Image (cartoon, rainbow over all chains, first blue to last red; front, side, top):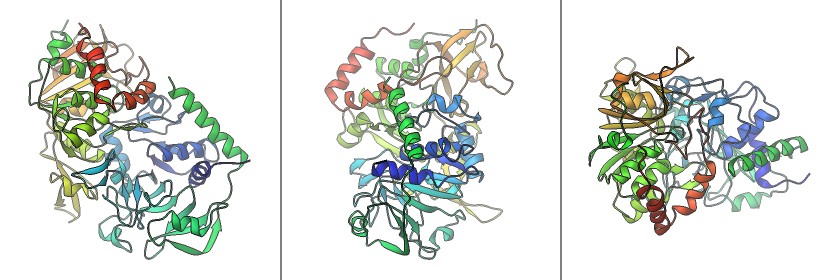
Length: 254
Length: 272
């Protein structure tokens, strides 16, 4: 069964989640991956959106983080101060699932501006929940399409802390959560090096070459010695994803 | 019947030029009808406060009502940019707009501090480069553990504007579904204006833990069915996602925006 790079990325991201996880979901690519996991191998996965919905099971992907179905199909819905204070900051969320416009070699993220803050080339939406999701969750998964514009040597703006300047910088800043542990792209999977925390390619997607990944990365990217190949999406995973996307498109067309 | 009930025009007349006005509703219950009345009344130099400016602030900014925007996520959810916001920031059209930018957790804590009559909100955050651009982010050493914590000043708006499902005849207000910061912003503000889908004699079958704003916490209530559209009111109507998608094109161009403003806001009869 043929598939697109985006489909493989979403499937590979979904596979990171399991039934025991409590996952704080960002909108867009993370939301697709998290709901695919729930609809396939992880039906008891708990999803939390920043609108305060806990244990939500939407039938289509929400356009916003506060679509009505997130609430009607949730176990419970709490206020926004409560979701950030008690549940996220309180340490009850195991996984944060994020994306961004730019990521650097230590998995710090930019979702604020391209160019300078005062005179941006592109003004992006800004932080939203990301900075505190990244420090409050037990660990963070990042899903992003890979290109030299997105995987940059230096962020134009650091919205969200990953591993800071690398090494033990994150814990020296006072954060004892793990931070980003996986970056899933449409070309490969990266993980931070155990000591330096620099993102290292650990798995190439089928048909993707080392050169292709190098060309799509704005720094001299490292590859693991025991580089593996990402398992292709199964027909079952692809059907679940395509059905979800078709339901979503029909629902949002109005 | 409570004398809190009034027309939308009378309720919105509580807002003065230069006020700090928080229009809340986290994706849900966004007070669009109230904002359109703010535009019709020609308010200027407002500081708008909203965690997610959404289309409502894009419209107020494009109509020239705002001088400053306090926010934490400024996009069209799931669609793209807010073009009127960007045009004001980047080109000063129709008026320059200053930004005061936070994270969601920061603004949620600022509202909670405001509602709690504390001078600042305190939370755990790295803040990132945002602290370089917004000096209101500060840090504090915990007096007990020595840990460094992040602070932001309490949010105490002059006026809070929210939409809700129901008010009873006494003027108590029921909020259901995604409740966002509705309670916090009403309790934090000097004046609170509420629009509701309907007025009922009594709330029937309301859960004892429901989110209710007692009548003595609000200053004016206007019954405006559909007042949250194109966002939604849980139990009444759904979010008009197609409208949000169409706004991308409509708002990208000044002339099509002005045409929309004239047709759908300025020349519209004021809801009674």
